[in-house]
Image (cartoon, rainbow, N blue to C red; front, side):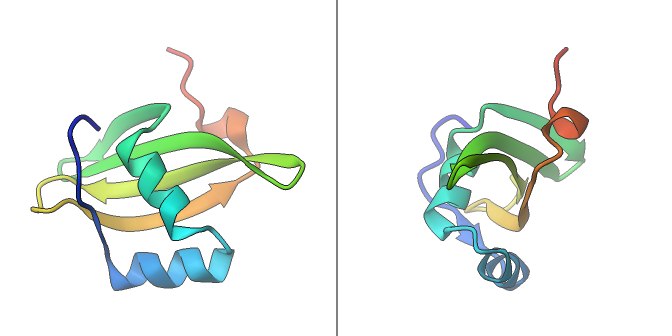
Length: 89
């Protein structure tokens, strides 16, 4: 996402990433510099990137509300089902 300097994590997102063992800085990096992004709903953008956890690569998916100032990370998780969510078009 071009020129996003500051992001805020919602309490829900903080709980999710802590419970899932995803570093906060990794989530923010995916939101700021995604390999892919697309609009999911009117105010919701999905940002995703492939990241290594140990020897395995996961897809980190971050949901961001861009209509807020600063933008708010709503949710984030990692999945091994990269082919399911990776967009090739």
